[in-house]
Amino acid sequence: MLPKSTKVISVDDHVVEPRHVWQTHLPEKFRAVGPRIIEQEDGAECWLLEDQVYPVSLMGSPVTRLFKEGGTGEEIFARRYDDTIPASYEPKARLEAMDIDGIEAELNFPSSFPRFAGVRFLDIKDRDLALAVVRAYNDWMIDEWCATDPARFIPMILTPLWDPQLGAEEIRRTAGKGAKAISFPENPAPLGMASFWTDYWDPVFKAAEETDMPLCMHVGTSGSLRKTAPESSKPTEIALSGVCAMMSCADLIFSGIIDRHPAIKIALSEGGSGWAAYLVERMDYTWHRTRFEVDSPLAPSEVFQRNFWTCFISDEAAVEARHRIGVDKLMFETDFPHNDSNYPHARKLLEQTMADVPDDEARQIAELNARKVFNFYES
Image (cartoon, rainbow, N blue to C red; front, side, top):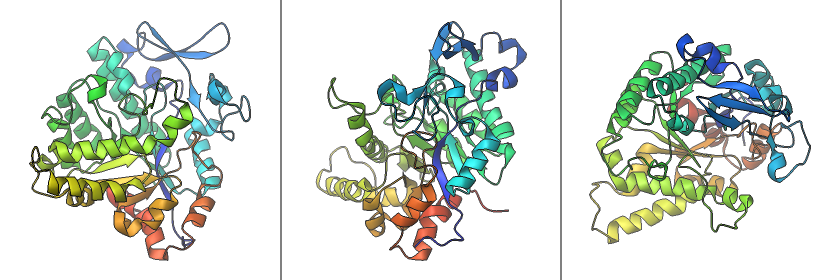
């Protein structure tokens, strides 16, 4: 079972960027065109960036959204900051929520405006502004949000996705400021960028290797979750989110990019973990039997064990299959403040899931693996 002394670390939560982020952290010359909040006639808030308007759309759970309990469909999304609890966007309030939830430390992805890997900033026409916007986000994350309590917040940064050389430079710059992780698209090809099957992204992977910062690939960062049909429902897409993680894992392993960067660390976020036992077995079977277009000297299972980590919110299948997947390959996440979050009962439910797991393995999954992957050790 999960020992009481375990300091649970969540490796996938979300921060709603406060209204002031870019107006505070951008160079003054960019503030008039950089991201800023405006209000519409109906009272909804929007981000204005250059000449584009992006409505505020803050996903929450029945516990974290304030505007209508138990809402469905569009009512899941808050349209104003006041429609969601302050812990979504205020670091001190977040720490209080973490205490209630039983979470010692957490890693925060961006929210709906930047999108989870900063993909929104590909739309910025002025590339000098775009770079300044990315850098301002990173400076805010490290110098303001995480600085509120460096022992409890793990700094994760974005990269300028339109230029891998600039991306490498930003990784090195922020590593010098204490960054521990990089949010990166699970598959850049659907976004109109070069795929992992080219050498285009080598500068980013090289910089991530050099700084020992994992690339955290959140489901949906390739543009969307997987739709089964134009008419399919949102619950269908969410239930199949693990398919995104599976596709990313296989794509990276078979593309050969990891062969060129053997020290890279990949964390597959919010895709669950139970699928890993089957996928690794299937990739090995394919690797052995289908030898054309297969250049890697290592079996996929060997690459997975060396380079990948999976993350789950609620996944009894993964806990049962932990020895096949690798106890050291599993990490925990809460997805606060989104709809998958079990706040304020995250630790309680994790303890129930771990009831039959030996104490040392439970602590490894809930805390120690994250400390090792993110180099986030207690001082």
